[in-house]
Length: 364
Image (cartoon, rainbow, N blue to C red; front, side, top):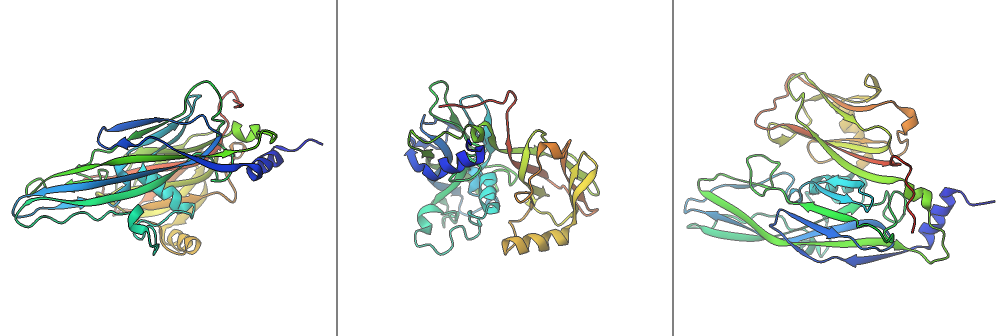
C-alpha cells in the first residue's frame, strides 16, 4: 500500500534537518530593500532583525517625540514574500508579524518582549532618547526582530515551496514606513516646534531557515501544492458611531486565524465595539460575541489580555474549509460611542492555506 500524503509529509518532516543561511545586510533608509532568496531546500521561516540608532533634535526648550504603540515593529512597513511562481505568500508589516507570533504562542508580548532573559538588551531595545538639556541632538539604540513564517509550522514543509527549482527567483521585498508622521501609523510623531527632527540609521539582517532531507526521502508534493498565506487588508470604511464595520475575506481558502487591529481616534481601541461577529455567506453569524465575553474568553485562552486594539478569531482547532462556506466576513458592530477622530482604521490579517488556481505542483 502506498503512503498517504499525510504520511509522506510526516516522514519528510521527521527526516529533514533544519539549516539556515544568512543573507547580505541591507542599510536602513532607502525606503525599500529586496533579497533574492536562496535556491536551498524547503523554506520554513525567516528572521528579520534591525539594529540601529534613533536621533532626535530639540531646541533649548525641549519638545515632544512620541513613539507609536506599534514601535519599533512598525519601522517595517507592509512587505512581501513572493515565490518564484509570482505568488505573494506574505504581505504584512512588522506589527502584523509580531501579532502573528503572539497569537501563535511562541511570540513575545511587546511590553515585556523577552521576559527576564539575560540577553534581552541584545535583541530588543526600544526606549526613545530624552531631549538634550540646552538643545541639540540625543540618540539611543533601537533593536528588534520578527519572524516571517513561510510554512504553516516552523518545522514542517506544509504550505511552503521547493526552493531548489532551477527557474525563477523567490524574493523578500521589504518596505520601510515613513519614520515621522501625524498618526500612530508612523513609527514616530514629533511636535515640530521644539522637537524639530527625528532620524533613524541602522541595518536590516535576514536569516533564511529551511528543511534539507536526504535524497532518498520522498518530497511531500501535495503539502507543497498548498500555499501558506499571511496577508493584510486595510479599511477605513464604516468606522463611525453605530456602524457595521465589515471586512470581506477571500474565498477558496482554509482559514486558521484572522486577527484585526482597530484604531479609534489615533489610538488602539476595541472598547467601543459592541458585537464581534464572524459571518458565513454574508448573513449567518458563526460567531457572535459581546465585547466582555470576548475579553473573558481570550484572557482564559492566553492567560492574559492581548495587546490593545486587537480582535482575534482562532479557527485552528476547526478550520473553515472552502466547502463549508460561500463567503466569510469579519463584522464589528460599533457602539454609539465610537469616535473616529483624527485617524481610524482596521487592519485585518488572515492566515490560510490554499491551492492556487491551476493546482500547481512544485517539484525539485
